[in-house]
Length: 357
Image (cartoon, rainbow, N blue to C red; front, side, top):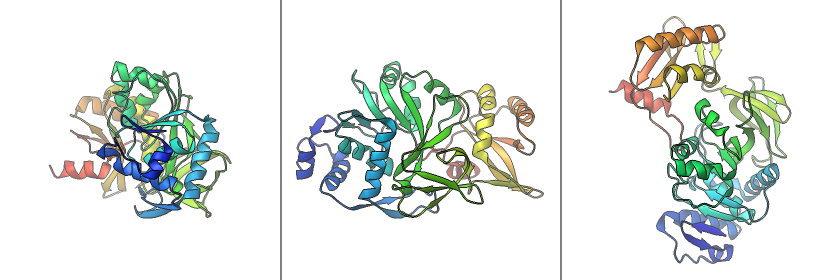
């Protein structure tokens, strides 16, 4: 059964196209479910640029089914489980939540992809939910939705990395919470990391997913979800086994400072506690800017109003903490960041908007 908003539909009703009671905002999601139930063999989806420039690709029914079944095996999901789809169903993550509800023969509730998707939820518990980090953070900010968040048995979070502050709050939840790793080309996630575990996030592959690295330490994936060929990503990793890895950063998001390759995502994770200590609850990112002598230098960009004294303290503390050459050379303050629809900081738009002010 699929509940679009407050109206329930059986699989048979969806297949026959009986839209009685369906609100306009769910029309496309309903149409996708109908196509699936009619046996459509392939679907066109747009990539986010994980393995190259964004483009439209075709994914097959077999790939999608492989992902749905592997996730079910990983979490040992039972028939009749309750699920919530609160993601944009125009994107692959939202589409896969629709398919999980249909293929797992569960009870799937579909709600609009709003900031706080649990705001109007009743007291029922949920077995399986997928969210982006901004949604999880919004749920924590209100007592009612914080309680609802605590009733979710399995919560997967994707679309953007979970920051250290949010990860610390997640550790207090009673359910299982995982960060996903995947892309449109793999029709959703192929690996998951336990956010409640201590230490660096270690991603474990789904069943039937094979992992390898190329000569540049980029992750290579072979799986029924990604097709017949090995998929070479732009993600730099460290394999901890043939079934697990630590994520280091993007190969196409590297700062070359005097011949030293720096991965901003990896460094961000290490200095996050310092940033939170001196600039609590501030968003931030690391990036490279042109430098006449070194080619590029690493700078820390912090959201909000500047504070020169605390900035100086942060730079000194980072220099003492980080390996040689890793420390940011400067801190830039930008009043407001720009964001993508999946909850990631849009670094390019943020920097361009700031430079044009």
